[in-house]
Image 1 (cartoon, one colour):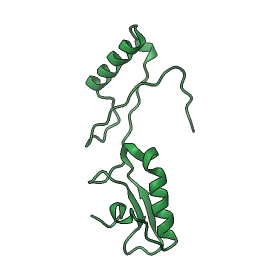
Image 2 (spheres, helix red, strand yellow; image 1 turned 90 degrees about the vertical axis):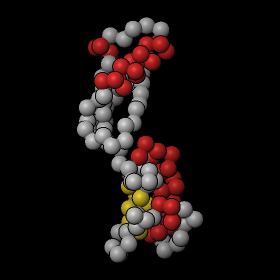
Image 3 (cartoon, helix red, strand yellow; image 1 turned 120 degrees about the horizontal axis):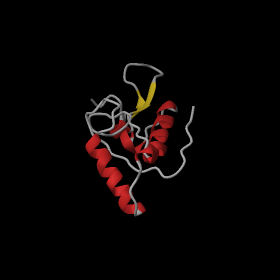
Length: 115
């Protein structure tokens, strides 16, 4: 299911360690103030819709990509944090190489068994 948004989308923030799905009031207020400065007018509360989610992340902030040690035939592409769209091609290449039994030059950095 997808949503279609009308107007502008302003944001976002990232607060490591949070697992709840509530928008932080202080962060929300800063975003509203920034949007009002850019727009040159106050925002009506009816114009604002908040959304929050949890970003998957590993302890070192890098994705988990490649073969799972000890689980023959299981491959991961997880925990991209907020850079999933930037790291997508790299993660895909590492996983594809692992599936084909090849070692990518970035495989060690993203190895799911590194922890």
